[in-house]
Image (cartoon, rainbow, N blue to C red; front, side):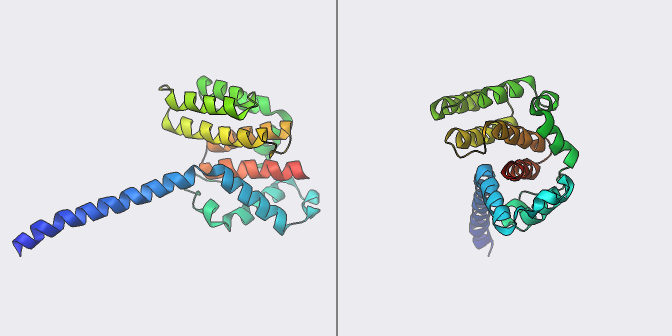
Amino acid sequence: MKNALTYFLPCIFLLCSCTVDDVSYNEKTEESNSVLVIDQLFKTFENKTNKAHNKQSLQDLINQIEAEALQDETFFNLVDENYSTPLAADIEAILTDADAVLTNLSISTTVKNYVRSILNTDTQTALNTLSQTIQNDVLLTSVEKAMLLDIIDLQKQNVLGNGIGDDWDKKGIIAYLQGAAQTKANAVLNTVIIQVLAGN
């Protein structure tokens, strides 16, 4: 019996560690698809509603978009204890002066400079080069890198002509940043809200 335990215990630990590695890998893969979640939520919201939301207050519209988003499993899995419903005042600030919102965000100057570079980059090749630079920048945290790479993915869509218009594209990226200061779910939802407003 003792010999059997000596043999089986390491096997069980090995199997458990493989399972944990697989789970964390899948979570990382899922998290890197922010743009896909944003697109999916935007299409869902546009398909389920008509333009009657033009008559709503901004906060009512935000609440409606949030209610739809929370029914989406992929978005729901991003929600954690730090998530909160976006406020109309924060979205309104982006609509009024996105540059001021970027300037006032509590992120490092290095990150802000990268964001400005991303916003001013208009080719896939240049964005790929910028992506490599960000990945190799030892001064950035892994969280900052992930956030910047998500923003590059959003800008790639814009460059390909899949965006919502230059000024709105910029507002969407800054909305993503504003939300990312809180949670990934807030970043995604903020961007969807800007896209819906752009479509009005």
